[in-house]
Every structure is written in C-alpha cells, then in structure tokens.
Length: 325
Image (cartoon, rainbow, N blue to C red):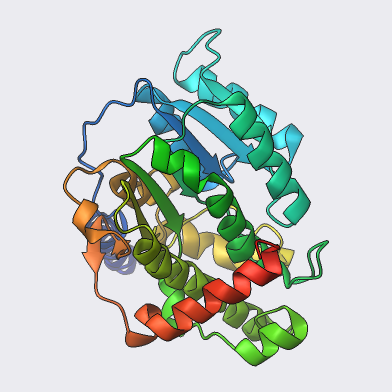
C-alpha cells in the first residue's frame, strides 16, 4: 500500500511540476516593458470597474496619469475608484475620476462624451476595454454584443477623435480577442436585425461574440487609414485567455465547470492587462498603427480581419446605426 501511495504521489508531483512549468512558460505571457511616465496625461478606460480594465487603470494611475473610469454601474464604478486610489496610495488625489458610461445606450455614450469634453482639457489615451458575453437587445434595438462591444466604442471614439488629435501624439487601444479568427460579418443580418446573429444557443452566442471581436479588429484597421496624417495611432489586441468576470452572466453550472480550468490555464487580470499596456505605452510602435497585437507582440491577421472592403462597409454601417450620419 505504501509503495502504491508513493507511486501515486510521484505521479501527482510530476503532473503539478509539468503544470507549473506550462503555466509559467505559456500562460503568464510577456509583460509590458515600457517605463513611460504619464504625468499631465489623461486616459479613459472603459469597463474599468473590473477585470483587466481595472488592472489597466491601476497601472496607468500609478504612472501618474489622470484616469477616467468609464463604467456602466455607478456603484461598481465608485467601488473601483476607491480601490484604484487606495492601491496606489493616492490619498485625496482627484486624478482618478468615475464617469458613468453605458455602452449599450447611444444616448449615454453621447452624454458621456459631452460631459467629458466640457470638463476635461486633454485626452491622450482612449482604451476601449469593456466587453460583454451576453445575448439580448440594447435600448436602441441593436444586438447586445454588437451594440456594446462594437457600436458603443465606435461612437465613443468618433465623438472624442478631435480631442485626441489636438493632444497628439495620442492612441486608441481596443481590446479584441483571438476569437475574432472565428468571427464573420453577416451584413444581411446586420441590415435586417441590427445584430450579428439571432441565435441564442451556447454555440450561437459564442459565434456572435467572436463576430463582435472581428468588428473590433476591422474597426481598428479602418480607423488607422482615416487617421493617416494625424498624430493619433490605434491598435487592437488579444489580451490572452483571462480568468475574469466576462462570463459573469453565464449559468452557474457553466461557471462551476470552468472555474478549475480558468484558474490554472488562464491568465490572471494583471497578466491579462500587459498587452493593453504595451499598446498604450510602448515607444516605437507608431508605425504599426492599425495592427493587431497578442502577448505584447504584433501579429499577422487572416485576410478577413484586414479586408479593406469589409472594414469600410462596417464603418459606414456603424455610422448609420450610431447616428453619426
């Protein structure tokens, strides 16, 4: 019995050791190496009350930036505000501010932009971080993931572009996902239903999420073209598989099944924020405007993710659906 137990413990030890090596070599990923200071700079981070958005905000505040926490929930936003101030030992600093923003409401996006432009003199970094994995409709009748993950950020970026240009060099960083590789843009469905898809099954939901992430990459691709000649650059990125709250709206059964997997095989939120920070802070990547990054490294894209025709068509459709034209 003791020999069997020793053999069992040896196997367990080997599995844990291999797992530890795997986690450190392949899961943690690269870190942002920039030492840039941001005193005098102003940053907006959407969805910064939780997950990698909050870690991004904490790091940018630590580097001296004035950080606007743009979040849907006032309660969660104010809790995050207190945490960012406390973690960074900012005391009574007024350099971290909560501003309410519901990306699922075009009215809320416009109100946020109007209030920001009235009260803030600068905008140096816009980080389009917020994202949801949830079916439904926005108050404007858009598919929820299309409306929040793409259209809300599309409108916000366009409303703030002139301020970004005035304060250049500045950057727009949009958090996408490797899931964009599985995405597609069904323009017929968008024109008919104002949604990327109409199914509600688990796999259909994941497909629509991937579609919305492809929208993020195509948006950045087209935005870079429209920003040529300005001092504004833009980047999209995959943060890695993150053990965060994006699946908080999933069933309890699914969350219970995923928990041991995400805890070991997924990055924590600090590790997950590194590519966002790289795109926001790294010197010398200005010539890579419009490109897609993963693990703090620029990556090649499949043709569908850099399709000039599809990107332009999506832009023009987004202008109509967001009320810009």
